[in-house]
Length: 229
Image (cartoon, rainbow, N blue to C red; front, side):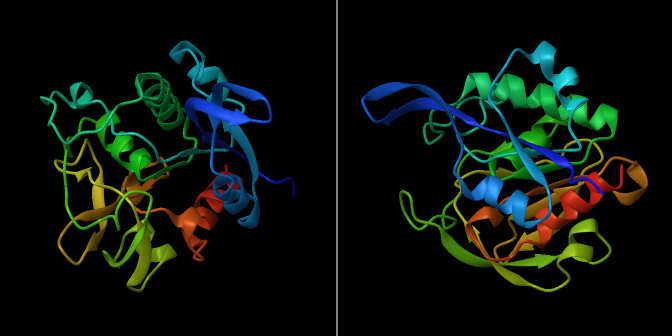
């Protein structure tokens, strides 16, 4: 049986290597490493024209929307909070188009951190623009417990409360469309969202960074769903 092809979205930023300093499509190596360890093949998806999203998704078995910059508040009809960081407009446009195309085509989707927030926004939800206590300071992840909601896809993958590596200052506020919350932090923050089992499409978002931890069950769930298409 061939391994499923999992597309992973990337950052678009300036980077330096050797004698070069140029705009670059970037992705922490932990993402493709996690895809490979779960049994998939990773393909990096740098920002492109939104009109290309459906063609791209048609070649994939699964989609991972990676972490990164804050989502533009204008995407969910909110005024910008002064604590909202710089946005990545190219990523917003491209990744929203990818999510829409994947859901329409029945391609499994996993949103990680920003990716979970963008999945919520794509389905009409909103975000809290600032939240304390979910980072350990600039560039430092903080562990905290996440409790699954029984009966959800996430709970099937991870049935017990577990510590997760967290790094975010925004979170889901109003849930979008048919999304349901499938895990919570101890302070009540929504830590996972998903489409219901009877909704057809396999879509799950987690607020933490599984690629930065040792628990591969969430990615394994995506790869299994991608393998079953």
